[in-house]
Length: 113
Image 1 (spheres, rainbow, N blue to C red):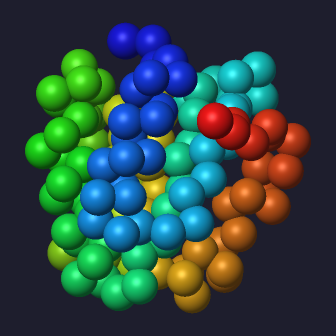
Image 2: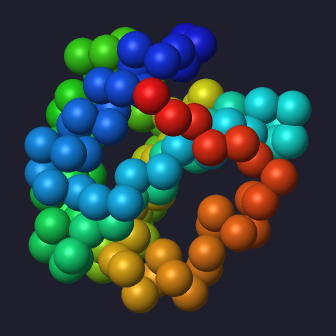
């Protein structure tokens, strides 16, 4: 499946449904052979991150987006959901600041709506 603006927008809505914050989408096309997009979001606690992850795992198949792998549960400091063309990272604010994926992938252009 090719991820388009419509699917990205709905994924943002799914994260927003559970009050995820600081949602960033990085376009990695032409930069990485691993995936086309990173979606990075924060949750205030591991409980909230688990709720966001559970919601995404329920809703993504409805969009036709496959979930190939998930990692980081049950600890939920950093949950990774690999959907092939997009990899979703859900992190606590501390974990996100420490790993700073946006800076690490600084060559990537941020997707805006």
